[in-house]
Image (cartoon, rainbow, N blue to C red; front, side, top):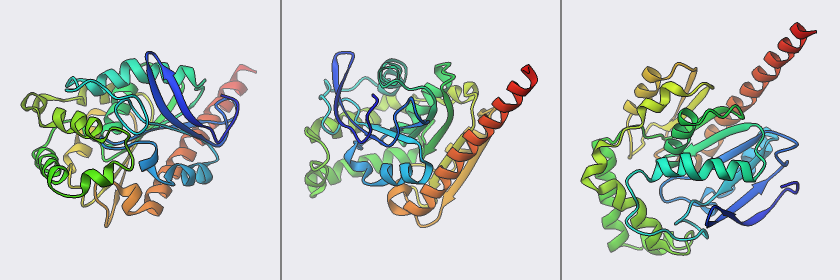
Length: 276
């Protein structure tokens, strides 16, 4: 993918996935791979990818997972390991297909969980850091309560109409996510073991008023990770700090991104000097 400013559909495996590419191509700069939330899509990121590209100078690649946005729908109900499938089967193919050479994974909510599974489950030297916005590593009571409440809102208010703006098949998107999280068996979902196998710096950004998760998620990351974990708590922000407090969120992520690559280049320079 040598051009920039691209948008369209990529066939990954047997599935058509909507995507948007902003800024330099993978051959020319690091790429930030954006992984959306459980009800997200390329469009629902708004202008945050553009602002992130401008702040870092990196390329930014966002895509809608199957069942979301303009991507192909999925068969319902989703399997309860749907995030593992995305991280270990779909994402590796997508990264290879776009010519990913070096960069960061940036995930929000479900996307942060997918980034965690990939970061700890795939030994990919191309990934130099992982950014997690409002991550989930285990299921908390507050998560289930809020997800049950949003199901009621979806079925009784104009929420469905609002979400339909971002998804071609809004029921497929909503019930694929909501049905999995509200399945009683999903209470046993736990991906914290993957944190111990991440070998690159991690940044966690969380709104202080997050209605879907508590600081327990951050505590788990700090306990399990052997790599550096940089935590930014965003005041006056809920589960989506990139929408509630975009400037503070953008600053935290862009500073982390620059520091990761500055440190990597400095280390690489030292190695070259030693070889000489």
